[in-house]
Image 1: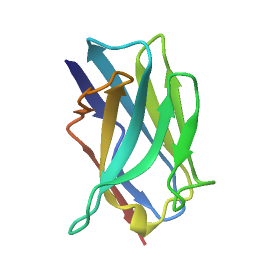
Image 2: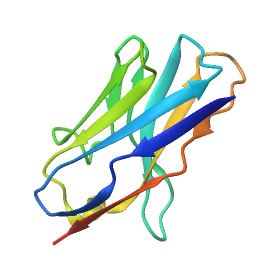
Image 3: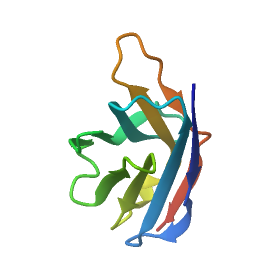
Image 4: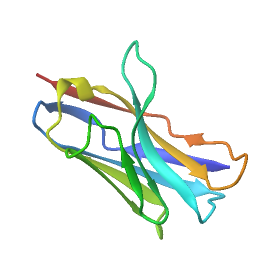
Length: 118
């Protein structure tokens, strides 16, 4: 079982920046994917960005060029640098972990609120 603890959310004006961090602990499989999802009120949870333990990344089209995901495998942490924030980025952001093992179940953080004012 893997536990995830997020930090770094908050309130920022449009055009500003925030950095989210997530620390994983527990039974961490060496090869894994960590990422960030978000859920706005009345909408489904969606992928924002994810990064595999080899450094490969994927981004949602809506955040490409503005957000950067990174990880520290030695510390089992993942971060999301968010620049040029827009009001439509407002959501609860969730950290996610999934081991590269068939049948593995994803772990989720408790979520951190990001609010971008116009």
